[in-house]
Image (cartoon, rainbow, N blue to C red; front, side, top):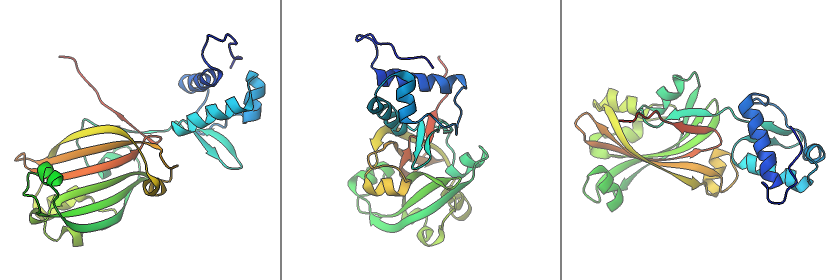
Length: 245
C-alpha cells in the first residue's frame, strides 16, 4: 500500500487509508482473520498521525470490516452471512442450507391483547389475544438477531407451552396445527441497537443494524404471523437477484 496523497483538495487521509484496506480485501491481499498493522505502524507506514489511523480503524470496526481484540490487535472480519430477502424460508432451514449451525434461545413468551397496530397487521379485532414470542437467533454460537413473533392464540392454542429453544416455529405450525406459511410481505430499514439489544447481540450500544417487519401468509392468503427482527449488519448482509422486465 502506497503513501497518502498530500493535496489538500484530495480525499482526507482517513478515507484514503480506509479505501486502501478495502481495496486489499477486494483484491484478496487481505483475507478474513488477517491481522492489520498497529495504529503506530500504520501511522509510520503512511506518514499520518496515530489519531488518523485510530479513527480509520474505528470506522471499519463500526462497519463490521475489522474486529479489534483487546491485547491482540485488529483483524479482518469480512466473512459475512448472506441472506436472501426475496426467498421466503425459515431461519433454521436457511442457515442449514449454508452449512451453518443455527440455534435459538427463547427470551420471553407471553399472551397480550392485540394493539390497534398489531390487529391491523394480522387483520384481527383489536383486543384479541396474541401469543408473543421473543427469541435470540445464533449462528455457530454467535448471536445475529433478535426476533419477535405475534400470532393469534385462536389459531394455535397451546403454542406458548409447546415451543422451546431451538424449535422451528414454522415446523410446529405445520406439524401441530396444519398451518403452512407460503409467502411474506417484508419491510426493511436501518436502525441502531439500544443498550439491552446490544447486550444480547454482543455489540456496542447504538451499533448499526437492519430492522425488518414482516407479515407471513398461509396458502389461503390469510395473515398468520407478524414479526419484527433486529439483525447485526456487521455479520449479515442481505442480497437479492432482480430481473428487468
